[in-house]
Image 1 (cartoon, one colour):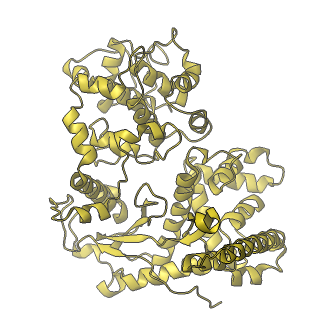
Image 2 (cartoon, rainbow, N blue to C red):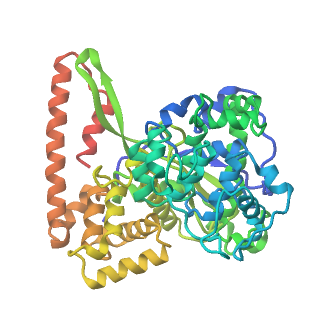
Length: 533
């Protein structure tokens, strides 16, 4: 099978210094503010955007705002571990930080009756009991490692806003209270309640709380922290307006964690590139722009729509107020200075805008197959870009999307009559291997989709195959080869009918636009060609 999509500029490979042997990034100085702006396109939200956040704006970068303000720190490597499910211990720790009481908590060695307290949580546990912020799950157990629920963490958050549990609200209705006071929307609350509640979502709630008014006043939680001296007004303004500091922070935050992650073995990571890391010749292990270019083209030859996104086209004077068109936006790839075994989907977009390039991290030397690494990375990208585009509706089955349908499929697979007992057992095993992380299950299915299903070799069950055909369709030459296959025939026929209907509608819009004096630009031509790929 030999066919290729048209060549175009694929990516810009940014070499982070093959000779940069330190685990930390040296000071960077930008002589031109436009350089800083181009590297960091306002990926963090500002305080002024808080109101919009409550109405469903993108909150994916909110943890990094909290980190810049010193309210969260991550693990000893600075990693915020946003995909990790939050625990009761982590929830209480963040609550104390949101209260601005870290110093008070560390000042005295408070006693506690619990026997399941990890060393790092010692100071928080005692202080939490002393201030009656929490009680354990039993007389001797705090439940440090138990998963925290949205209702439990929202209870902490409302307490930080001076609301009293049992008087102003009950813990099991804490989300309703949050909606009532304007901390979040019903859609956001439903997403937290019905989806995975990870550290990412915990920090989203904390970010929204910073801009919510405390009980009985006009000041916000941010004002409360400023009054306590935990966040100074100057610090707030300085971090939110200084583009150079933002760039430095982003590079430092990315480099240390990204270098470890792409090395592949966290426990044995060494920031110095040694001869024992090069298990093959340098020529064979070197990851070049050409190799990455070829690997990306292989992806597009199979999953042609991988990097396409909807963008808005508008020309009101010629009768088009808002027409959504498909545009291919290729990723930027950053090469990390190590001999590693893993790639990393660092950012699904380079900024708040959805039409900016994703950022992938690859080791500059590797003995692993680059094509396999690329498929894994693109699978993660597909999941995360869908989450970003869908916002709070990313797992809401009423809003059809890749992530929503996959979450619904995995959440209710036991009751699905279209799945055999054997298929259900395989899903159960996949969830165990992925630690119940739906994204990890999807990525494994995507790998099988690209490597085997594209050649007509069955690896997926009927439900997973239907979802992937819908949202990750094969390129036309592959579809033509699979049309006679009964496993694909029905779904591919529906896809062809939908594409034909869409092409007909677009041609009607274009004809009307041209009659009004409009000119069919290259982006409009590309949009039409997308449905013919």
